[in-house]
Length: 119
Image (cartoon, rainbow, N blue to C red; front, side):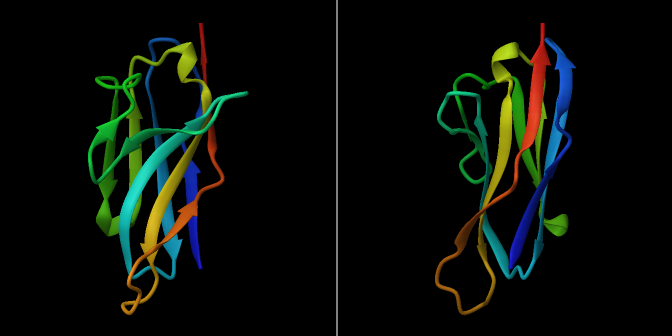
């Protein structure tokens, strides 16, 4: 099995910065894709940033930076110039192959970490 654990969320004032992390563990042969999503109350889950394509949501371009430490199976999201509208639960997603024989990986989700930006 594969586990994704997010950490680093919290309460921050508008204009501040926060870095959240996602650590993957378990039976991992390869991590083929990783991305950050977020879901605000009453809204659909949306893609924030994708590590492979370096694609960012328009609302976070220039403020957020996604990165990955492959040796640690860990992904990060550096969030700067935070705004109240960034308030959401942030989820980590990874596509993981657990065996060398797997033709394609399976999608896994973390439990989410709350980010709250106050005025």
